Length: 295
Image 1 (cartoon, rainbow, N blue to C red):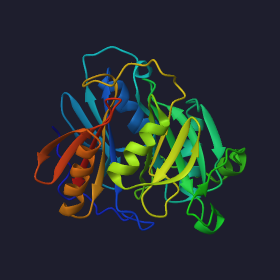
Image 2 (cartoon, helix red, strand yellow):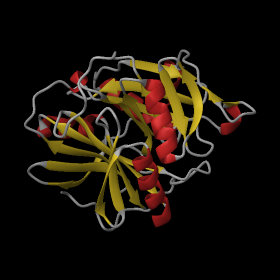
Image 3 (cartoon, rainbow, N blue to C red):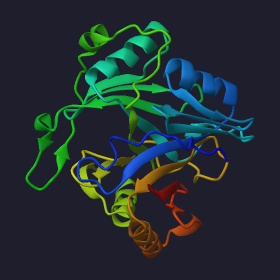
Image 4 (spheres, rainbow, N blue to C red):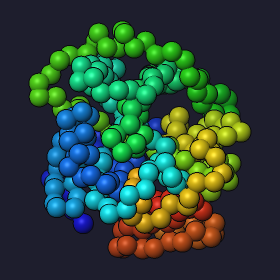
C-alpha cells in the first residue's frame, strides 16, 4: 500500500461549514494503470505524489485526492453499484475556469455542465467510465437555505462561455493547490434506504431529497454525500477488486468520533473492520466500502 507524503500539506479546507467530517480521497480499482494515470495527471492536472508497479497516488498541493490501484478484474464500472461520481472542489471560479479551459482545449469530452444554485459544475468521465464532477461553490449568501436547514439544489444552464473565457492558459497545467475532494455521489439500489443508513452511521442531515436520490451533509454544507438509484434495481453488489470504486476515505478530528461511527455502523448491521487504532472501514448494504480515519 502506498503511503502519503509525510510532508503532506495541511488541508486548509477541512471541517469547514461546521462539519464533523472531511472528504479526503477516492480510491479506484483500474484496469489500465498507465492510461488512468495519464488521464488524471495530463487531463485533470493532478500531481503525482507516489508511484509503484501496482498503485499511484495523485493529488493537489501535496495532499492525496485520487488513489489508483491496478486490478485484474475486467467488468465495466457500471455493472455494479458504487461510484456515480467523485466531486473535486476547486477553490474559486477562476480555478474552475482554468481547468475548464485546459480540458476543453485538449478536446477531451465533457458529459454535462450545470448551475446548481449553490455551485457551478462540470462533468466528465475518466477513460474507464468513472464519473467526475469539477465544481466551485458559490458564496453561502447565494445558497437557497430554508429555515429547517435544507439547502435546495437546482439544475440550470451553466454560464459555460463566461467561465471558459475567464480561464488562463497555463503550461504545464496543474490543478489549483487548494483543490480538495468536495463530495462523493454513490450509485445504490435503494436511495431512501442508503440515505438513512449514511445519515445514521455518519450523523448526517438530509439537505435535499427526491424519490430517487438524496443529498446529505454534516454541518451546514449543501452535501458531502449523495445517493441515487438511477441505474435501477438489478446491478451487482460491489465486491473487492471490481473496477471502479474500491473505497473512499473520510476524516474525523477525534478518536471518540471514530469509535462512535463504529458503534453506529454496527447498530445498522454493517460489517466493521478496524484497520489500525486510528482507521476503520464499514460496508453498506450494496457492498460499498467507506474508510474513516482520525485526521
